[in-house]
Image (cartoon, rainbow, N blue to C red):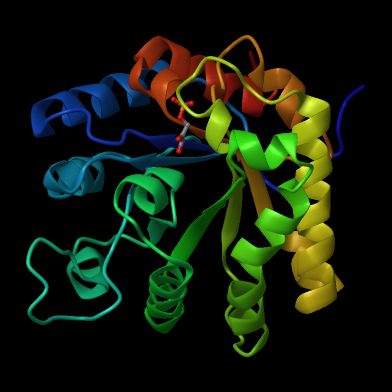
Length: 265
Ligand code: 13P
């Protein structure tokens, strides 16, 4: 059944710690060439490592805009504009490069780099202050799922963030539901299970912020998305796209995912 598209689908490539500047530009230039004739409404976001951001944005500025044209985003940022924070990158530095999208609270940041709810909240606050679109990642661990705690975990991760958005006029954000056990494992959630959680998240947005915002916010699924399973995810009414790791590193697969999102593949 064809899904009515009230929200433009999103395909987002989280490259994590992969690809050099040269590889990034090479990928983007081939990508533009390969989607030249794709006449679909899809928002494509590419999140290269920090070191490749400048090359990516400079390259794209020199290209002709076309129907499918990637936006470059950052995988993380600090909440302060400047200061003694060795190794960190500020929102101002990203804005200077023309970057408006930032991933916040990815499970690898939470688990490997010990980011807590408080720092994630401060990052969301910084994104709002700088009018950047945060892609806020949430998701349960395997044990939590086994214990039936998925909704509670996701709610705890989102509560103070949604209350923060409620206090501002700025509601340009996306949520990525990424069950931790599905990331990089080749074992994706079932589209039905992912859809249940995304529907729950949308209802939470509706009850905390407003039904209008809930109807507008794009909620993505992430975790072992590939060309075989992606169509089933985006056919679910509450899943508006994918935050893709491994499969986004492969140009042909990524192009295919974009076509699938645009109902073109
Ligand atoms: P994989 O697509 O490799 O499972 O990674 C998902 C992810 O973490 C995207 O942010």
